[in-house]
Length: 224
Length: 244
Image (cartoon, rainbow over all chains, first blue to last red; front, side):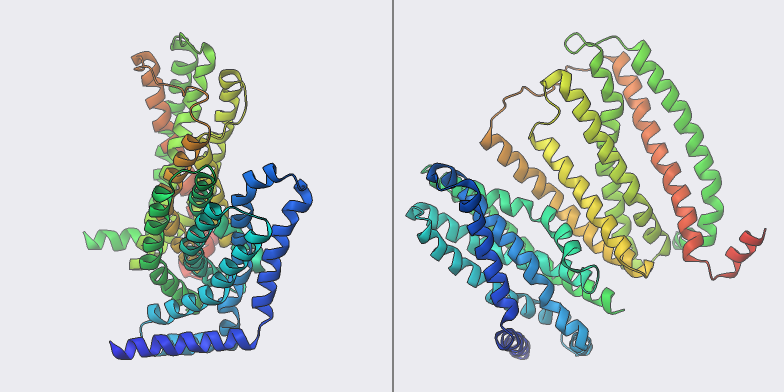
């Protein structure tokens, strides 16, 4: 058991080191996220009533698109230089290795997106209730996107680029989008967001239990 | 039992029995389709509320049922091929996808045509409509994934994982969309409440359901046969067939 925790930690550390040494992917996805959010005030004008009604959608659509773009990078370099085959050949369960990689993706792409959206929320002068709901939905929702997306990322590595990946992820991630935006709108109108939060948490637990298994078996298929 | 499964799973055996099977399915489909259409369009009385435009349910309801049914078949055969590595289930899953996508498309289009006179608009952001639309995108994603691979076997197994994730997700999608549409707009349009349907209307509908099922079987077998020839193009029995 201790050995497994250790190997999980080793893989996690390796992935984090790799991403922080080569920061372009990380910075690009954040810049992309911020640009999309900025596009909305520019196209809808500065009338704050309109912005307030669509604000929940803005953050979530941008987060979804940024995650789609960043996911391709998770397995690509490992796949190209063959290190993923070495990992698959090791005597440790592939599910463990894959979960470490997914966690690394969430730490490097999910957490920066959460922090950036809170900062942008201050700039767009959101109320504290909306900020709280945004924070809760993002912290529950972005790991689901990483988990669900990693399966699709493995299935599509090296095929037709990110377009196919987005086509696969976007329909499947609609429940997360719906529950999150409803929660933020409820918070904006002063209602409780407990029900949506529970749903997101439930989906997250389902994703944590099933997605690593699916990713591992998808990886075996791609390596066969 | 196991012997039978293995025999059924061999492409040559499947190829041999699929031709008479598809022929019988086509005959049943033709009989049910013609009698169902005649019963539905001519014999059944007009609905007291909706007049004659209710008759589109004879296409709409069976295709909507089939759109989900085919996805389940796809996911089930995908699971079987992942677990037991049976070639035929690969082929069935791959061949089902375009048929299922067409059923979904027909359900959406007939729904829109029915909605115009009934609801006054082609499209409503209703829970059922939206989840049917998302289902169409799931099918299109599956087809896109299939065409992206060069190796069809890997494509089929990758598609199996995608279809299984889709099956886990479909109830969540449906529930979330229902949640969303009820909270957002409320029932602005009273739904097509099925009045306890009269027998003269119900029998043609059941006939059409059987017709759609057998139509699916026929087209599936025809597609599967050509896929088998493509899969097995290097084996000797295919060469024999082609020379004959």
